[in-house]
Length: 273
Length: 318
Image 1 (cartoon, each protein chain N blue to C red):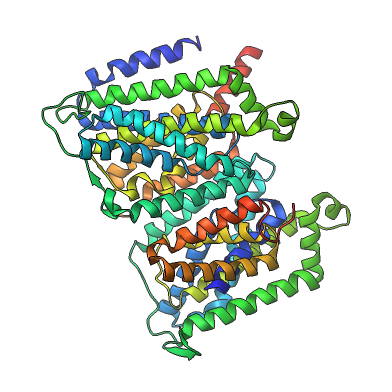
Image 2: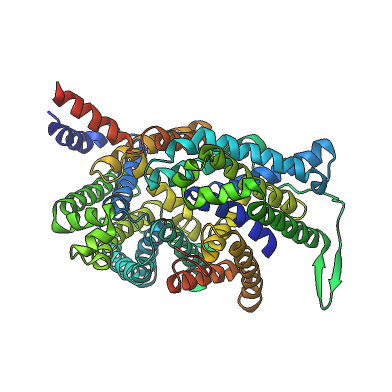
């Protein structure tokens, strides 16, 4: 689960690093991705693993559209406007899903991958394992893209200094839109993977989104590799917290960890100001 | 002319129950007063001081639970519970606030969400106070002011809610005009500059947080006595914290009347769509609501009050 958390959080972190906006609708993006994967399976008989690229592209389009439709207009506004623009979007998407799909829980029945395998002393579900591996691969892909390709470097330059970047001939508007597209594609991949073994319902995003904010803040906003470490940490703490205490308190343990870390290092574990 | 509006509104609010005797319009008004008061309380810490707290439900829940538990276990009148809840909320606000106020911006907002989630999970798992099953407030007859229960008519609840709103507005006005108000606005505009000029940033933030927490807890007690049933899902959720903020944001952050205006627009919209479209499980009311918020954030981040301000300056320019 840690890898999936990390992938969700990476999208959030990328967007934040680029333009200092927390996308509070991130969880709802995840929900949209899961529904997309579900309908690809229900209508097109496509296994979530196969429809993954489609879902990613769809979510990238969504991110791009959201940037141009909403975010561009609040970019220069106060922080409160930015927070509430994305909060409003979250409520809109969630209730739209409820309106269109109803509140019933849905699952993808009979996915390709099922059952479990023994990894040493622990049993791991095959879908979960596949999700972890794919999420890790996607994460590495993202990292290589950001640190090696010209566009990735342009993105990083924009994140560091908008004005300097635009002086160097980088179209910052395009970079912002691209950041939203990539960040949303990450959550698209994560959603597609989760659809294999998790219930799908309009509210599904909120729990994951909360964990994603914590993960991002834990690793340090805008620092993509640190997000991976934080994601794994959150996954581990969640599992251990559920094991040691009651499962009902497992998220509390994660949040408490977050508070402790942030109070000790306000910039996150690996962040810089 | 502009000064006459609040007086007119108050008079209108006072005679409202005499004109509208049906429960539903009264209920809508009560909810407007309650959310207006809660949003005003949030406005003190977020609007004037710029600290965007997304954990107001913690105080609301503390107010609701404190009075309800004291009433159920000790038979203590909810009025004492109201004060006790407010005091407890103040204490919690200081314990939480002291470390959390070191954080800024988004980190602060997310930390308050985390606090809210932790508190909610703890209450859900605390069996002595009902856990996830919640608390039924014992019903006492006949109606009495001492027991804070009125089953015959909503009129008493109406006036109590109105009083709560007036209290919140008076406190906001008092804060805004006091030395504290200037400190808070200085912190909002530039924390470092305020600190450099000798403002004890943490202490002023904590004061604002305490005031905000106490008022929110009072709203919680009122809510518990109005519905006579509370559970962690209804008084501690993140969605309540956000709703409180949204009311204020819609109306206009950092203004005296903004939260009331926001409540006056949003609550009827919510209750109306709930009555007309609710029960279908289709959440159309929230759909409209989300769209509205995006619209406000994009078109006019100052909220509805900003339109009035613009109209007023345009009027005086003429």
